Image (tube, rainbow, N blue to C red; front, side):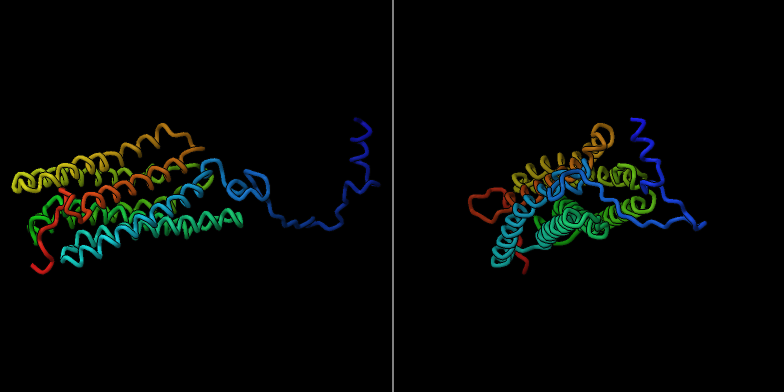
Length: 301
């Protein structure tokens, strides 16, 4: 009402302060922006695109913990029968880095949920560990496609050169990707880290690795017919895995809304690498009933 407006402007009601000092007032204040009611641990501080990431990663932690225990058990069994080859050591390292990335990412989001402050250092460390895990997985697949530790104990010279080029390109693309994201991305915008030149370059490297993997696997199968039972399911599954990476990136860029992008990306990345580890664990399970078991060359030979 008019009376309320006049009362608000009345100096006698102490609503308006007359400033006697020319500089005016210096105010310092904190603004807490919430996406949920105070006390809602999984909602309060998270934006719409981050909802459910923490819950999903906590569940992934327990699932991956079981995975890592199983891989360690298999590693011990392989060591006992002198078949703990370098390719399986690379696989074990990939699983360890993936598990560590989940722990670090959970820690970052738990800190964010508790205090409302984003720990970008922890998040970057988690994504970096995930990248290392993925690189190690690709390296192992390329080595196996060349028959290393399955049908031969040494790499051909051309194969070693190709692997060096692929892994160097992979690493440089990932490093450039995170540098560009940290330096140029606006925090106010919801951007996908692959929406950059290094991101497109990384997808090109992955596709090149896939072509190399397919070609070498087919060549190895043609030379060693007894290993077809191992290479055929591996070739089919991991070809789909290689192709799925750029496809999901393209879908996330063009189809997934901004308010869903972060959680969708997190879900896909965690599930895809977990399935890659799970399939290889099953494929190489040291059991007489497993006809796909690839190793027959002992580490002492």
